[in-house]
Structure formats: structure tokens, C-alpha cells
Length: 251
Image (tube, helix red, strand yellow):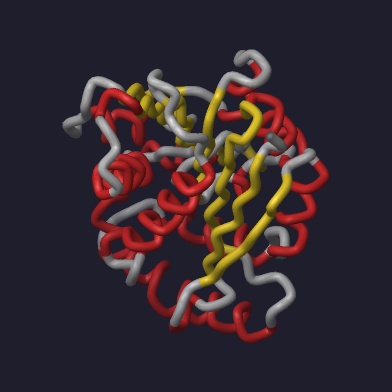
């Protein structure tokens, strides 16, 4: 999923996602468990939402990219028997190309897709105005992570929830070794074959390598005032590589 990160040495991440957008869905489809894990993250967020009071619950999908995480939210909502008119989802992404890919898909009336920097979008919202926030593969790409998490916590209504889903290998020698092997042996070569944006996939490797540990992500959520912070990882080679971290605003 794409992001709000600025340029580094003239290379703009949002522009790289724009270039990769036409082949992005095909690339992530090759990642084992990618969509199932998004469903898991979406389900973790729905578990934290307050009970509907007759009006639609308002959920943000920050870093929505081409819409896979938005689709996961809607699928989990339907699976749980939620009424379509009781869930409003706004997908936000900095990449115009990725949002264009998302907008080309079919969505129910309760879905909006917005091109915006995630932090800027949150800062325009009033306090206590959102029931839930899903952020898949976003936090790692935001320069001011403290600011982003703080804004997430500020806009959450009491009892609302936030779920962050991302790669993190800090603190695990095994995970670091697996991540290097997968990137250099599979992901970057596939990007060449698929004619996707190779510098973007090289950036993927380094950004994950240098990202927060899971413990640091949890600390960020707790430091912003969220409670009931929990973490899970996944099976197979992705154990200790891909993580879902959730927290809730105090009721």
C-alpha cells in the first residue's frame, strides 16, 4: 500500500507508486497469504469497533492503495452480517495512480476514495469523529510516525479502534535473514520480469529492514493514549516478518 512519505534525494515515493500502480495488483497477488492477511487485519479492526447505534460506523482505510484493504473491510463486514448502510469507509492514499486503480473497481455507496497525505487528512478531521482506522503497509512509509499515530488516536471516538498491519523484522535475526532472501531472490527479480518499478521494490527491502520493531509500534500506540494494545504475526516464512497490531481508544 502506498503512503505519505516525501522525496528522498529526488526520488518521490508517491510517484513510484504511481508508476507501479498498473501492475501492483498482479505483483501482490504473487505474495502468499497477502489477501488473507488483509482479511485478518480488517477483522481485527471490526472486532474493535463499537456496536452500531443506528447510524453508520465511520472507518478510515489509510494507505488504501488500489483498494485491496478496503475490499477486505467490506468482505469481513458482509461475512459478519453487517448491513451495507451501517458502514462508511473512506480510503485515503497519496498516490493518484493507486487511487485511480481503486476507483476503477466497483464499490457500494458507502465507500469514498480520496487522494491525500494521511497525516494531512487526519489533521483536517475533528476530535472523536472516527470509529475505526485501518492502516496497512503505511506507518513504515511515513516520516513522522509519532505525528501520524497521535492524529489517529485524536480522531478516534471513545471505544474506537486502530489496526496497523505491516512488515517488521527488527529484533529477529531469523526474520531479517528471511526478508533479505525473499527480497533479493524473489521480489526484486519479479519486479524486473513484471516491468514494475524496480527502485520501489528495492525501497521496500530497505524500508522494512530499517523499520520499527513490533515493540516500538506498540509503544507508539500506548504513548498516544490507546489501550488494549495487542499483536499477532503469521505462520510459515512470514512468522515475525508480517504483523498486525491493534489498539483502542479508552471508552
